[in-house]
Each structure stands twice: as C-alpha cells, then as structure tokens.
Length: 79
Image 1 (cartoon, rainbow, N blue to C red):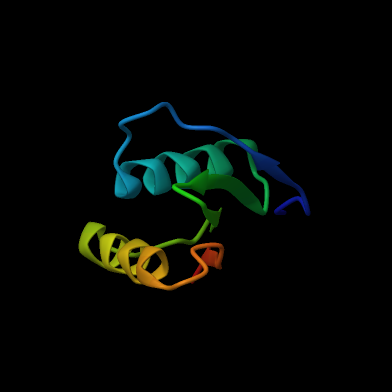
Image 2 (image 1 turned 90 degrees about the vertical axis):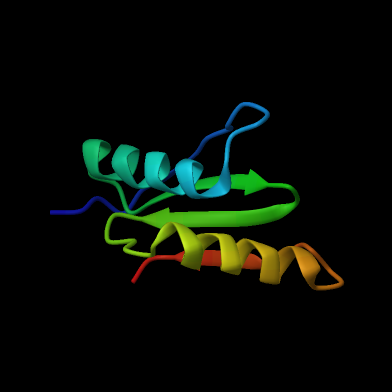
C-alpha cells in the first residue's frame, strides 16, 4: 500500500531533467511514498510512482513550463 507521504529532494547542478525525474520515480518506489518533489530551474516538480513519460515527453514538458511567463507552475508527473 502506497503511503500518503512525500519528500523533497535536491539534485546537484548539471543533472538533466529526465534523469532527475527517473531518479525521483525510483526513490518514490523504493520508499513506497506518494511523491518525490524537487525544484528544477524554478519549476516545482512532483513525481509519482507510476510516472511513465519518455525522456522526450519530459523534456518537452519542462521546456513548456520554463517558456511560460511565470516559470513557477507546478508540474505533476504521475500518470
């Protein structure tokens, strides 16, 4: 049973967005928690255990959010 918890992590400089998402998903599964959250260039990201986007889809999503004026959109990657 998935716990109703989330944790916030920080990735080191230079980490690619898709790799950060895959690592967050893996950690989420290992800890059996609902979400792993992190900030990526000002975009708040929340990754769930069932995130199943390809690297290209992830890259497209982050570029879409970063190109918006606010840059502070909350991006949930759990499908």
